[in-house]
Image (cartoon, rainbow, N blue to C red; front, side):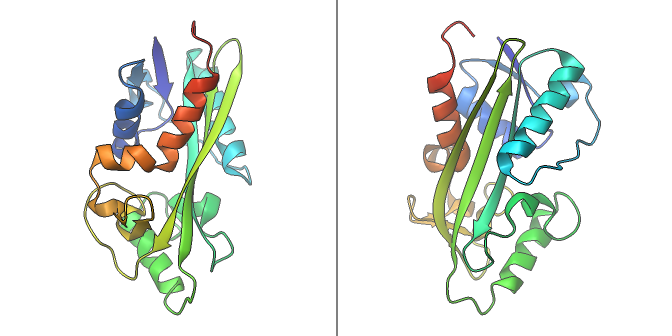
Amino acid sequence: MKIVIATNSSGKLNEYKELLGEKFELLSLSDIGFFEEIEETGSTFEENSLIKAKTVFDFCKMPVLADDSGLMTDFLDGAPGVYSARYCGEHGDDVKNYTLLLKNLENADNRKARFKTAITLVTDKKTYTASGETFGEILTAPVGKNGFGYDPVFFSYELNKSFGTADEKEKNKVSHRAKAVTKLLKILPKNL
């Protein structure tokens, strides 16, 4: 079965291929010719993932899986949160985003953080949602070059190391996205 993953991020697509690749044939937005910018106007990860999934489903009429993910820090009252991808003011500049985060946490006595993902799968019959979280803290400087987004500055409690030093298989055992996908697969009907 084909499922469109509502992203053109190669890092995110690779994670989904690792998590879902054997069960489904995954397509990216560019694979289906969708090049519009989707405005994420929701105030929660769940709202934004639904907005993305429904917008792409309306375009292609195929099952669409979308997520909205972000990093939330205790010290900054949950920021960057739903603005994680555009925290520095422009969308998708990973280095600028985590550099600003490190600056804002410079004198923080509490560096605890968590990644959260909300996933929505829209089909012609039903909409399914699931979420996942993983916990850790923000390092004082990036460590490692693996992953994407805030991975180099996120120290995972479960792995006992930076996501930036974890390989895909390690990260996919404990990541917020992996946990959300696991929950989603449990609620999907067998004949999807």
